[in-house]
Image 1 (spheres, rainbow, N blue to C red):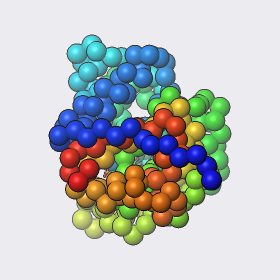
Image 2: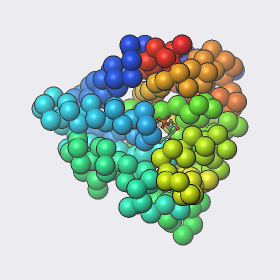
Image 3: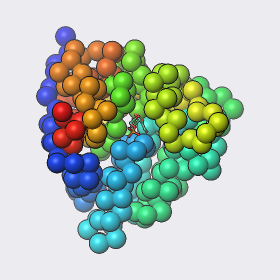
Length: 245
Ligand code: F6R
């Protein structure tokens, strides 16, 4: 049996306070090493986190100008300028507002002719540059991290994944009516995520409470991929009260 650790859990009053706490942790890593390589996430939970970071940059409290990053995932089939692509999300919410250099922000290509080869290239690029100093994660309502859906194992690496029906339904809110929600993505694996020096997972809202409970108190295993964070010696979880419920 691999050794299990207890992630440090912080419960903030609300989602805004959780975002401030998460941004402060990220800024701390960058103050320690202004050229740090960060692992970054997208999704609704990250929008206020990145807004807080951008506000800290504007106040001169931290600079992200020298930072480099690797994102967790990208939808297969979406070009970088598609409004729902994760590359576009990063440019919109972080690169521009927080002064990060888009050329130093790695996101898998959603339009590579061979998605499997692109996943392998991404894993190799991360291994060559990494380990990342801090991997930021959101949490899926079904316990996914990155797009490692239930059934993903702890040694999985960057690969092409098929999204769960629940994930497709959850993500439909970002797409227009009648617009097709991608069903495949390139995602870092659980093993890729666990290679980070530190991990910070942020979850807010009552819709995440079940997944939070499974992550922290359920069995460690592929039914809840986020439970594998308990195999990492330096994992931290920031919740709001609703997600901690
Ligand atoms: C995003 C990602 C996903 C999201 C998760 C939560 O890059 O990998 O794991 O973090 O689906 O999404 P939100 O924050 O929209 O609830």
